Amino acid sequence: MAAVSAVPSPPWTPTADLLSAPLPAPPPGQQDILRAEIERLGASLDGEVGIAVLDVTNGWSVDYNGHAHLPQQSVSKLWVAITVLNAIDRGDFALTDTVVIRKEDLSVFHQPLRARVGPGGYRTTIASLLAAEIQQSDNAANDALIRQVGGPWAVQVAIVSKSLGEIRFGPGEKEMQTAAAGLTWKPEYSFGRAFWDDREKLPPAQRRAALEAYLANPPDAASPLDIVDTLARLQRGELLSPESTAYLLDLMGGTQTGATRLRGGLEPGWRLQHKTGTGQVMGSLATGQNDVGLLTAPDGRVYAVAVMIGQTRAPFEARQDLMRAVARAVIASHRPAPTIAAPPERGMPLQANRDP
Image (cartoon, rainbow, N blue to C red; front, top):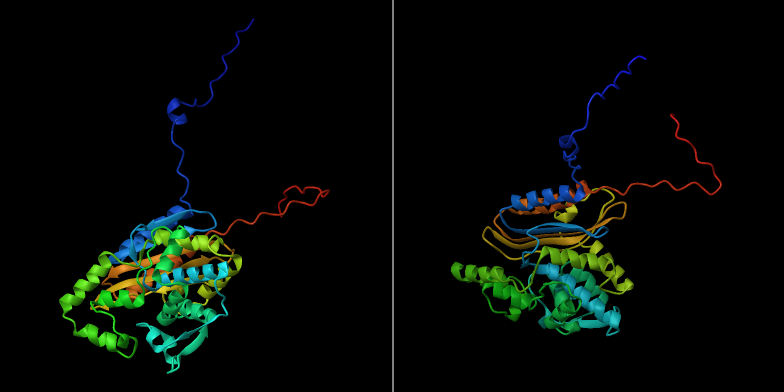
C-alpha cells in the first residue's frame, strides 16, 4: 500500500506576536477634533482667555481654561432675566406690569433708554425692559429690573437656588463700574461724559490699581464651563416654565450687539441665541470681552458656547476674530446625524440589493 503523503502546511501560521498586535486607532471623533481646535484657538490670543463648548444634545464638552473665573460684564444680564422670569412664573408680577424710570434711576455707560426719560419719568413694561437689557444691553433697563426683583442680592439668591455653579452677580453696574475705574458713584455719571471726564483726571497709577483689583477678584466672575452648563439647562427647560424659557430664548435670538463676535462666524442655516459683555479699556488693555450663547445647527442639534476674554492687549479685530473662529470651529466639526431609512411597511417584501 502506497504511503499517504503529508498534508501540506498552510502558507503561514498566526503567531502570538501577530495576534497581540494592537489594532489601528480609530479616526478622531468630533469631540477630539473640536477639543484640539479650541485649545489651539485659546492659546493663540495673548491674554487671559476661557472657552467652553457643550453639546447640549449629546452631553459632552470641550474647553480651554474653562474653569477660570473671568469677568462677565453684561453677560450677567442673563441672570437678571432668569430671576425676573422666575418671579413671573411664581406669579409675583407680569410681563405687562409697568414701572416708571426717573432720571435718578439711570445707570452708566450704554443706556438707550435714557433718551426717553423726561422730567416726569418714563413709564414702560417689564416686557420692554427685558427686551432692552437682553437685545440692546441697556444698563438702565437692567438696573430697573434688578430693583423690581429686590436688588442684586435677589439675583444672587436666584443663581444659588437654581444651582448655577459659582456664577457671581456683583453689586450692579453703578457700583461695579465706578469701583473698577477708581471712582465713587455720582448721579451725574448717568449723563453726558461726566464719568469719562472724571476717570481721565485720575492719576494713571490710581486707575490702574483699581482696574487690576477688579480683575484679580471680579465681583461678577463666572467660568465658561458654568455658563455653558447654565445655557444648556435653560435650553432644556430646566430653569423656567416652558413659556418663560421660550420667551427668553426668543429675546436672545434677537440680540443686536456683537455682530462681529460669535454671530460673525455663522453659516447659512445656523442660528445663534446669545448675550455679549464688554468691560472697560485702559490704554491697550481691554477687559471682559465676552460672547455666550446657544448655537443651533440646521438639523436641530444645539451647542452651548462661551468665549470669555478676561484681559488682553490684543487689538480689537484679533478679539473679534477669536470669537468668530470659535463659532466656525463648532460648525466645521458638526456632523449631522445619519438619516435612517424607514422600515418597509408590514407585508411588503424586502428588496435585494442590486447594482444600478
